[in-house]
Length: 298
Image (cartoon, rainbow, N blue to C red; front, side):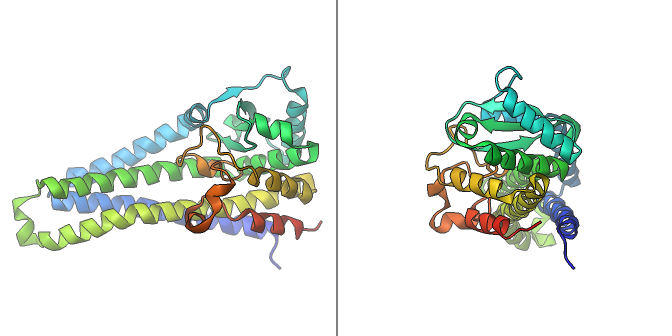
């Protein structure tokens, strides 16, 4: 019989498989560019560049994300009740207590970031703290702690880095085609065909990378919902919180496509989840998430 833990293992395996696809895309684009210019150094440079970007994102991802979100450290004296909730849930989850940051924004939302559970951060907006009751707040924090426990925070950061790298490489190759500069031996080596393949690859790779990013994010949200509900033993708390958060029309002041998938709910407001926009949303439909939570039983 399938259990929550079986699903966790399955999602982890699928996520690593998707990460492997990202590396293949990077190598494919780097190879196409290096072939066009008859320079293996470009391929080596692409691989080295990706490794450097991964290193940077691993060590400084939390600082970068917190700065982009406009988050500031929250002191214990400012909100002792929030610290107690986080500490109690962290103990229950068997995790170190993460640092807590506050985003001065009336829109309710939250996210977790950091390179591992020892260096994790949970960021809450002022609107979230003011609008949710204790059970709902516990549900949201348990969701974010589940992201930390499942190592989603590192995986999602690496995905963002690789999507950016693929887009940069594709853009460089596309521009190089307009300005020329390829090897004189290209025609003898099937250069015309490589140009066509390169154009197709440069167009489709960013799209494919984005779709993989969305797939990873959506799977992770369902897993964190169920793990968070298991932690609090009260799925209705998170379900009610998601209902309140998703119904807010106004977008976050510092919302961006680069960090949107980190938030518990789409940070661009309820209007962003209409029509064709749903196909490229970083989060699964909130109705499906709420239904799944309310179908849970202990």
